[in-house]
Amino acid sequence: MTATATAIPEPATDRRSGRADAIVLGVELALIAAAVVVGAILNQRGVGLYADAAPLYASWHPHVGWGTPVAVAVAVVVVGWGVRWARTARWGTLLVVGYLGAVAWTLSLAMVDGWSTGIAERLTNQAEYLHEVHRITDIPAMLAGFSDRIIDFQPGSWSTHTAGHPPGALLVFVWLDRVGLGGGAAAGLACVLTGATMAVSVPTALRWLGAADAARTVLPFLVLLPGAVWIGASGDGVFTGAVAAGLALLAARHPVALLTGGVLLGFALHLSYGFVLVGPLALAVLALRRGRFLPALLIAGVGVVAVVVAFTTAGFWWWEGYQLVVERYYQGWAAERPYGYWVWANLAAVLFSAGLVVGPALRRAVVAAGSEVRTALARPTIVLPLTAAVAIVAADLSGLSKAEVERIWLPFVVWLLVATAHLPASSRRWWLAGQAATALAVNHLLLTVS
Image (tube, rainbow, N blue to C red; front, side):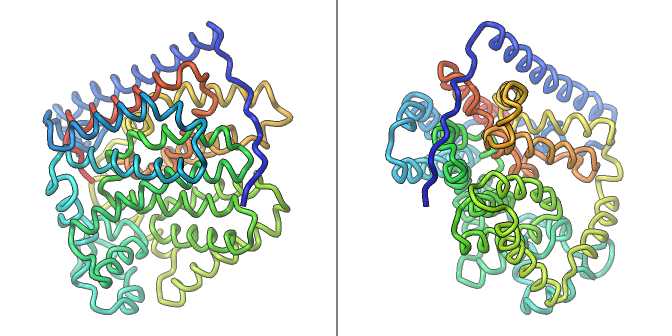
């Protein structure tokens, strides 16, 4: 399936635009500085942030590791040659190399912390999904009784991450165990390999939506995503890959692809309650694709409904689980974490995950929308990142994600980077270098926690 590429006008490179980008960058840096300083003060005063390196859920731990030289080498190759090569490479080859590059980048960042800490033991602590896997002897029984074990401080309560998500998240790791891929190492690698598929799914969606040039521009930014620090290895890596693939399939023209995309997004609803906010992105993709909107919506909707019905029939009702998880949420740290800090510090955490390029890129997308009002709603490089930004703001204001959003919002972050297509070609390599530097700094100065 192919689509006729729609050329993106060359972004403005005049001094006024450059100054505006610099101002936005300055605002981003000020936000991060404020979040770090205020977080340190609040931690010193004993306020319950429960994040030693606020606004990130991490602890200060300057270090290097086996992954350091590999990560630096990957960054140098992508920045030095990747941007130029991506413009002319054969599409299939570009996707394969892009995926392998994303895997190498994610694995090398994880290996800065070492094999055990970075990958093999990352998902094995008592708060994680693997803590429950070997206790699941009957999957139908687990699904039927899942909601009964969400509330904390009762016999048989689920561990933190399992209780905080619908049962699809736990099922992923149970299925891995059932096919002989049990244990922390296999689970960690599965997160890396699945999460890295976003470097294929997002560009493919753009190409199917008629923005082939933009797809080539955006791909290197996805390969060197700073959020790869948290893709490797956390369950959110799997979530990111699943959501990106589901949205990409909605951009295709074939009914089977639409149905499959709907099934994936229906399953994503049972990976995280927050993925109800993927709905606007799904509608945006369906509206942008070539073809009639309503038939495509109906086909994709059938896939979503089929998954919801399957889980409901098995005994898990999504809405009931959501109500119980809100109660569980305030049984833990969320009751003490101050909304007044996290409602703005969350946005600083997102900047570590998306990279500082996201502010100037979104600014240029907004400017492009204002100057091309008649065509803006047909431009995926405008609609998709702005829709993702709105979803993040909605999640932030809800108060149901206080801290840890650098990984929780990864499925939306990858779509924010679509706005990098609006950066002038002369500046892309510099911005990409900044992205790599952000990830390297985070992973070498901090010990992140899934």
